[in-house]
Each structure stands twice: as C-alpha cells, then as structure tokens.
Image (cartoon, rainbow, N blue to C red; front, side, top):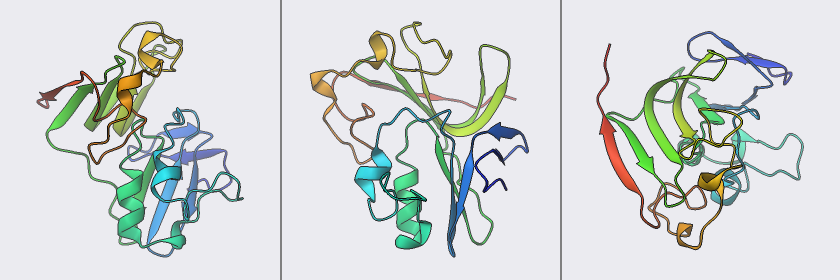
Length: 180
C-alpha cells in the first residue's frame, strides 16, 4: 500500500496516483484526492478522525472502526474507502443505485467500473457523475457546470449525507441491475 502519498492499489490492483492509505489498528482508510469534491461528509461526520487542520489529517484510531466505516460510506465521490483489519474491503451496495440530486449530479453506489474520458477505468463502490455535460473531468462532476452549483434545496439529510445533495429537493432514484 502506498502510505507515502504517491500511489495506492485499488481493489482491482490498479495503481491510482496520489492516493494515500492511513492505517489504524482496526481499519485502514484510503483517500484519493483526485476524486474528492469536498462534500465534507467526513469532516462533519467524525471530526475526531477527519481533521484537515491536523497532519496526518486522517486518524483512523480516533474512533471505533465501525463508526469510521459508516462515515467513510457517506463520501459521495468514493474519494474515501476503507478496509477492515480482518481484511474485508468495503462491500458495494446491492443492488446498484443511481440517484439524481436536485442540482443534477448523479450519485452512484454499487459495484462500479467507471470509464473516464481518456478510457481509463476506475473500479469503485461510489461515484459522483456529471448530469449536465459541462464537467471538464467527464464522466465525473467537477462542479463547474449547472449540476455542481449549490441550490437552496440541498440541505436535507436522509442519513447518507447532506451537502452532497442526497436527501433534499427533487432527486429521483433508480436501481440498476448488474450485467456481465
């Protein structure tokens, strides 16, 4: 694992530049800054573990591993992932779900393989995709277009987050079936 901050291996064995793993006694948390869109679910959810003013900013042992895992799962982009000390990685949601937020972003959860504009494939359990087509980081939302702009009706919280747009406004949810 790349605890030096240069690269980390994802579940499929592919290296991601810039990802870093923070090891704790009961849980390891990996952060990929290239995917983070600063929804701040981690910082609001468990500030004793996720503190951007501290170095290192993630201290997995500052809370019970189950609670850390719960907060990591709130990350809408998949920038945060975890692996429990017993070796179990974060399990994908089943069935896969797609939720459109009030501002148009697509929040996807499940066993995902997302192909980027350059053809690179990222295997993840969560992704925040562009719904307006204006992102410079297609298919991901970089919040540069209409679907990334904050709206007044995003303040709701359905237990899975707040500022990521889950829970408020006019969003819809769809379930995707897995095809092989």
